[in-house]
Image 1 (cartoon, rainbow, N blue to C red):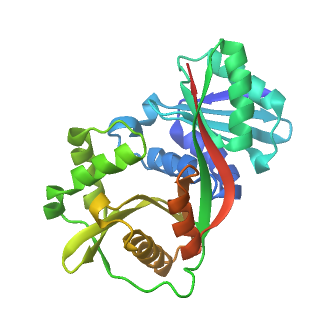
Image 2 (image 1 turned 90 degrees about the vertical axis):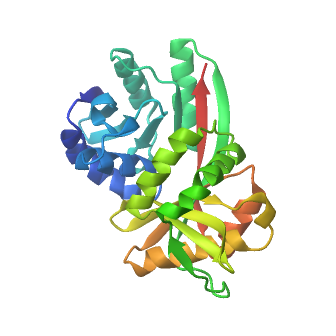
Length: 286
């Protein structure tokens, strides 16, 4: 086994992209970040590849394991064709130890994440803390019987409330909120046309976002309904409308992540027509 670290994102893209596309929906986050880095048009915050850990583990058959970390976030991994090799994991961990990078956690397909975390923690003398258990869903057609709804792209005037919605979303997801940072990020996403709003009688009641467009697949996330508008079907209507919009623009699949601790959201998405493809887990090292 050989550990290969990349300093050139375009070289990493050239070697890893096709491999990751074998499971495009599963690798949406990893692929999305790689595409952002390769494009090089936005280097704000974590998006600058100069700060990334990019690595593969290879043998005579080719790439066995791919790793990407965009600090301060966790490392994401993909075992080629989901064939997990403990020797490849051990080689990756040895290689990372020789770099300047400090791995604070892993988020990836559940079995691979657990195998990596166990080996890494044992090698580095770290304690494992299990975070969110998630499920990755994909959709190719919105289920029949889901009524159509009108959504609109967010606009600058929505900044009157969007940062506070994002603050609420962060709290719901146990993420430390930051209104100032969220406001800046919201404006970036508004300009990209990512955020979509559902209204009822002219009143904004729910939002959802397009995330990471990769060839045939587009992600859906950031679904939020303020507490006083919940249990009225707004999230179902908003996600279904955004999913229809994405599919109408030529994408073959919509992909989203759910927290398995939230049975309501999992039920909503399955009602719309999303089907599970695999589980993922967040693991921290302390």
